[in-house]
Amino acid sequence: MDNENHLDCCKWEGVECNISSGRVKAPYLSNGISFWYPTMQHLNASLLTLFEQLESLNLENNNIVSFVENGGLERLSGLSNLKFLNLGDNLFNNSIFLSLTSLSSLRTLLLRSNRLKGSIDIKGN
Image 1 (cartoon, rainbow, N blue to C red):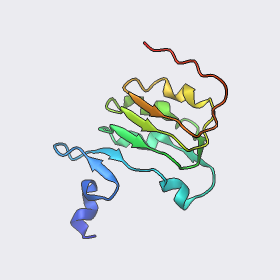
Image 2: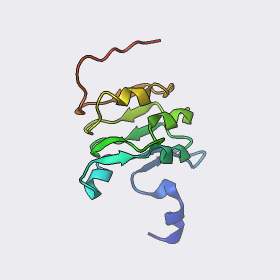
Image 3: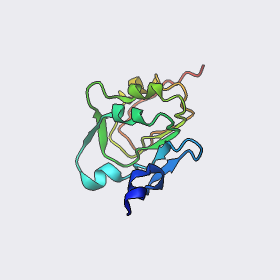
Image 4: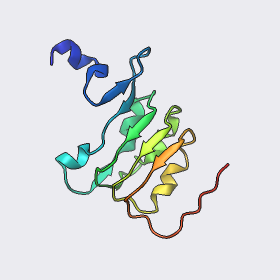
């Protein structure tokens, strides 16, 4: 990759950008973490707040079990464009729901194949 393409994140493989603003709107992180580190992961979601235009986030199949202290999904509440979040095929338990309540712009949430147990009370507004 030449130096010009290296600096332009919109030309990186696995990144979708807003054409007019040149900002990342969807990084594809599915299978990424667990491929390199096949153990249980603790994600720091605050690192993702740098992507102000983020619309879609796919963290599927990464062996994520929890978040680092002060780095839960509630840190993404400032991402007003985040509409799609895929957390499927990880190791989350029911405590994940506490982090999700602050994501007011979210329209689609995928949680299949995690460690969720019992009934889940979902109340719409």
